[in-house]
Image (cartoon, rainbow, N blue to C red; front, side):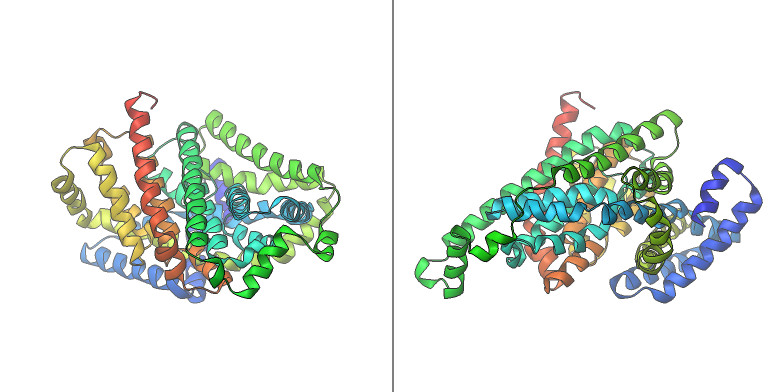
Length: 463
């Protein structure tokens, strides 16, 4: 279906469009049968609510078909993006990163900084797969025993990447809802992402200082004293595990891999006018072939494609497929049934014509719903498909930035977000603990800082 969709961008054949609709319906049915957990609840709710609205509005079959294909391009992107992770697994990059951990990560602040930065960087390439990958790599440091420190670094680093990264789920949906151009949006979003990362780092440092101040030395468990002593004076065994020379060439290769990929997406999208999401999907097909050839691993690509990609990566996409097709279907039904007409009226009564108040209401409204388990995909879709930001003097780029802040902070605290669920499973903690409890303050503080920075930039005439 993904290949058929991309080919038809050039063929523009009605017959292929019909084929894509049939394939989309088949993929959706298989996804609905396989999906579990909170994604199943949200997905089924989206389709049932949408069906009720469309039946009540006497919608023709063409509207049902339109709703089913509303987010088809997102499914295409999700299908192909896992291919970007193949060169990372076969380029010996994880071994190089482990060496960096073992040599340089000696304090809590360094551990948090390295984990969060790597999460933000690698999430651009492999999305949610970055969480189990870095959870495994981080085990090279004994700092990984601090579950709150580790989960905070993973979740906040992932959230920071979703503010700007073109390969993330929220970005694709937000650009479609706002009609913003990613190459215009990107510089501002990248700055906000870095600012979100800085806020997370400062909070982590303060949280660690508070933790150690609240524990008198006399009350420390004996194993913590031993552990602290071991950090100052490493044992001979641990010294032997540290590599004498780090493979900086591999670290540089990985950095170049991400930088070239992002540059390619920006340039192609800007020059051709092709939607960024589609460019990402195309790059996911082409870029791994080029990179595997450059590192001399091209013969492994076909083996990986037929093996792990089909057996592991694609089946894991069932949640994303159900969620985003459901979101598109819901947006179509809300629009056709005109029930969404009440959302702009409600916001108008709450905020008047103030763009600043509107931004804070949207951001914190999405956060509140996220805390109680309503994924930002639902609230973002409803607001984005019903509210005209021009009423408040808000440009598509500014509206996209407001949504991306809401999305990023929402998925960092929502117990129904896939990244929170994945992290909680690895850390053996509940999603409520990892999301609202541990990351709640971060979500609120970062939202205030980012929205404030957003309107400061606008006030200075930068956007």
